[in-house]
Length: 434
Image (cartoon, rainbow, N blue to C red):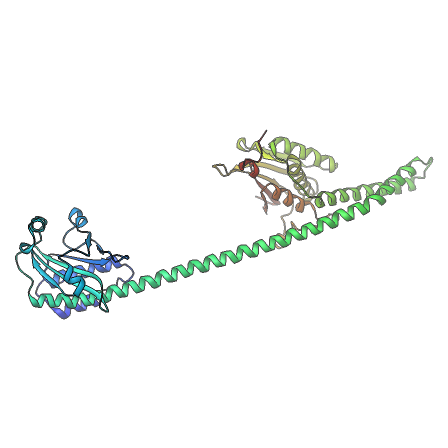
């Protein structure tokens, strides 16, 4: 800040070197200090036209006064008789408090203002604001000081216009960046929606094909069971023939399981929600899995947190999905070892979800096939149908949930179903939990 004498070139240079174009208030604050020092003023304030051009408003906290006094003078009407010449003709105004009408004079002296100089700020002849200078001592502003104030006002106007252009361009760039980000997000969401639509259409087509194949296989399958039953009735069947009949029955039974899997996958589902005990679903699924895999020696370790003991769900669909996960887990570790079934609650505020996970001690899923494991008929098993995880995902989707696969804590794989504890239709008033 200039502290003594006045050097017009130095003051102009200081204004020109003010570089805070990113912060208009800070820029005006610096220029107020320079203008006050170079014109021997104790107080200075820059006013700018409001966007609606109806009044003048302080660009920042004025130099030399603040608090209630600054707040009182924060706005200035354009129809003020004092500012008339400055606003209409863009010429400076110099006056003393003693020249003011009584009401204004008393308020001015009480506030500590004795001498005034008001300089217009403009851009190409269009008013943008004013530079208001004031002294607390009885020393009127000389002509050379007023001329300097006018020159500084021109420089201040240029700096303010430059800052406004910078800020406008910055806002335009940021707005364009936001639009681009929104557009990119929309494209990504559209691509994701299209991919999901293609998947759903493909699943629907495969489901129709699965039902068709299952129905076509059912009749010859029934014949096979009948033939095997008749062969069992023949007396004194040689052991070798009995062995062959047994193989026929086993393979027919395996084919029947495949037919049931095809039908389960192919039929459209409409979930029926009701209040369900998670522990009951888990226990029933373990019992069904153990029966289906009669030679399993797996140990079942079940953990159900208190907050995850119940949910609104379709018990059949949830249990069907869990049986598929338990079967996969048992088969992945050669029907031995420990399988961990955990149920816990996640989220709050009416958005709680049940996280139902199954962890095995087998071999972790190859990361390279993770994006395909839910595709119908995709399998890494020699005798699998590739419908187990597809049905799990379909049933989870029916609950408004999702399925994720991750490596186990030590080895093996964790598959987790995440479904709302309160059904979506229930939130909308569609069902009443029982």
